[in-house]
Length: 231
Image (cartoon, rainbow, N blue to C red; front, side, top):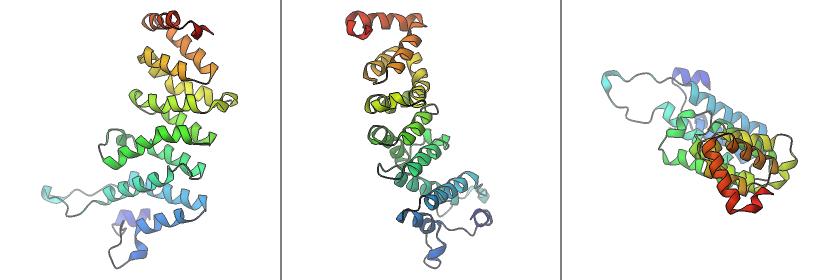
């Protein structure tokens, strides 16, 4: 597939003649069954192709009369990632979808409606998933998000899965993901502390706030108004 993409013989959609050569059909086929390894291979292949394709420049500044191969691959990857982020999908497939979503760094500033819908799915996924593996990937992804994007996802992770307190990694990963948010906005840090089901994370938030004079004032104000927070 990579060789065909490089020499220009790869088609994204059916051209009416070579339906079975359509990458769209070939990539979707594994997702109709229960073979996780084939689904992952299809996802990885489309991702690698979309990252590695270099389009030839159009001569004379003329506009192409159809979407470019790179644009087609991007649309296909977005479609596949959307399928993978279903709550009932296999945890390995969904986890890899989160991983690959944030490897596309330019997508964070992409105004494409379908791309933004992928990011908008993450808070509900963080709240509803029963998979510790997927929550670990979401927690890792927090560290690659813009600070302003982290709150909604982090608050769902901290509030919805109290059993994660016994996990060796998850509470720490949650903290690593929210630390820049606590440092930049003490009041949001307090909201996270009050909603968190993890005493360890609450202690980390309080310790981080106490290390900064401005945040310390917010912390004292909160304790004064809500004495039970001391407990």
